[in-house]
Image 1: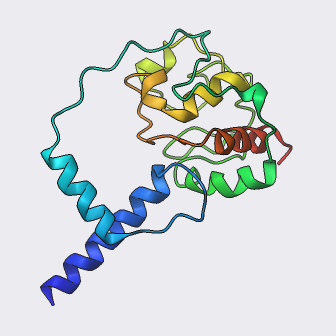
Image 2: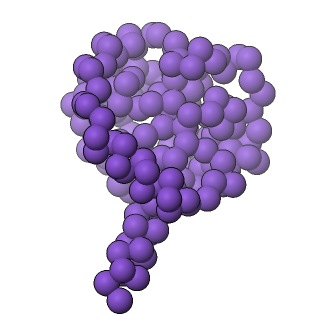
Length: 172
């Protein structure tokens, strides 16, 4: 019985982590043996070196070298990817949740959505959320705004980031 509970807990945790920041498409599946191997490897691995300084507010350089201009966003696929974001964000104007409403986020100055309490890091970042800056941010939010409250790991696939941005820009 105890083993069944541990298996259920591990499976649930794996699914939750995948939905919050696994990095992409809905076709991902949880693989318990891979998760266990990853946990063991992570536990044995040394802590990573301190990361490089955050990019400047006007920089849009990504870790993977991709540019938003090189991709065509698909809003329909972006809506599917956005299901990962729905636990914390709404696209309805004025509907703040764990995270701020993302209605009209493209073109908005960071830390300014009314009724939401932002981290000092986000509020003082000097960022305006252009589509290109969002593309960079969605790759790895803590890189772009160190100290952000957003615990999302990011979307590793450039096309997924472009698609989410297309969805956010589309009339909803």
